[in-house]
Length: 111
Length: 113
Image 1 (cartoon, rainbow over the protein chains, first blue to last red):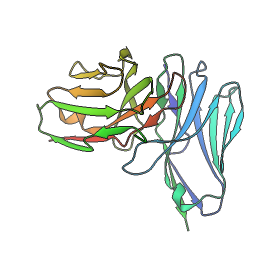
Image 2: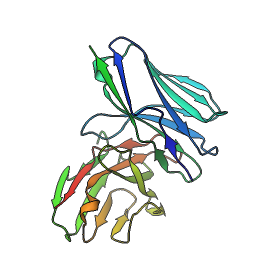
Image 3: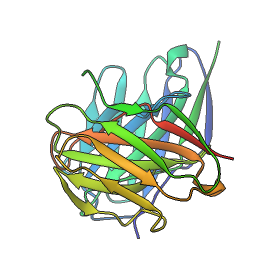
Image 4: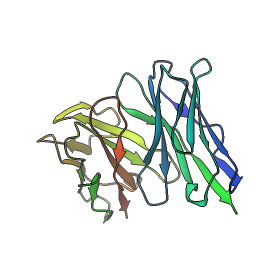
């Protein structure tokens, strides 16, 4: 079945450092991936997406990398700021048109 | 409106009570999703609409859960005879078309006592 998992449940980084959040997926038919940020008491907020015909996509301070060979997705946040503290989810869409979420990684920023 | 709106934000229900949760999607968005999020977990898919058609309800945990979107806009998730295990945040999301990013509302936190 479909499943999306994360390597680490928590990540702590120093303010100003780069953060890398990883995600593994199991459905090789998935063709669209999204990273969401969720702050306490709020709904998931779209960060960046990538389709399976790409291996890298960049946004403002964020980069998503997709390795279809090993079914791995990563989110890189440059110059991490206190406002980046949140839980980050990767999600995939396959043929069923529904987003499948992983468990999430909690990112904590140390001053 | 600017985004997806859900109401109420918080709901406390006595066990056995029926509840109705409302979602106002972004205007013009074709697709609408409902998710259930337990504390410390990722959102779990419940059901999906394209316009007024419910295309997938495979995630609804029991026949006590029912969702509708009669005019292809506002959607209601109804839970009958609530149980304690129904306590969770219920998230609604909409997207302009299939296979694009979904935008989420703030969620409704349901607590069954």
